Amino acid sequence: MKATIQCNKNSILAEIDKRIYGSFIEHLGRAVYDGIYEPNHPQANELGFREDVLDAINELNVPLVRYPGGNFVSGYNWEDGIGPVEHRPRRLELAWRSVETNEVGLHEFMKWAELANTEVDMAVNLGTRGIDAARNLLEYCNHPEGTYYSELRKQNGAEQPFNIKTGNKMIKTPTYHVFDLYKYHQDAELMDTYGDTKEHVDYTVSKKDERIAISICNHSLNSKETIDFNLPDYTFDNAEAWILSADKMDAHNTFEDPNAVSKKLFDDYSIKDKQISVTLPPMSIATILIKGA
Image (cartoon, rainbow, N blue to C red; front, side, top):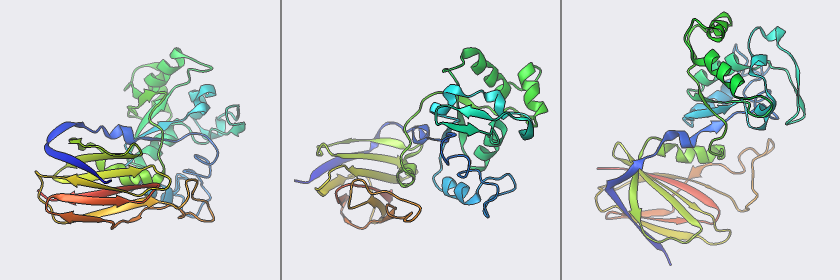
């Protein structure tokens, strides 16, 4: 039995805050070193950041990135990552059992965030440290001038404040391609919808500048699902769509097969009058963009 969803273009529930589509970078494995930062890589820029990685991130419009962790931050001294790189201490990193060189620290990451066109959600160490260290970090990053830590920031080469946001937890990061499929909902208006779907089907319908985005997820391991979206207040006659799907629940990308699970054009939908009917295979996510009036 297929489901029918009624979509009311003129009834808006709320604006979808783009920050819920945020991500994070942690000093973990190859996320920083040999990930975003790899000075000897042929595509590294003059700062050591990989341009190919930056290009991929910029395609996603990532609005917010938490840094520097994660478990990592629970034993991290932010002061280790400021000042001349050659004078920074090498520390045992106990969360992930590695040695932290502090080659990438606060100033380097702020430069990376600027290149990635994203804001920084700075995590603070409330594990081995506490509120006082967090207060000093905030003063270093955000106070314009005239205090010990703001002047120290200026001595280290950042005349203007970083204006960071602070926090310790945020939404879990989806995969790269899911980010790509859901970026159309950032700062869009969440439309009022109603109708019954099976418990393994989720959807989001939003509007932005006369463009409607419909994202649908079919969690079922073996059943395809058909959903009709009725848009009585909207005039349209075409759409474009993409899907992320795989034959196995544990399918994943590897260095040997980086496109095993990747976004593809999707055409299993039909438009009739003011209705769009979508059929999703099991284990799939799709986004459909509709432009009209």
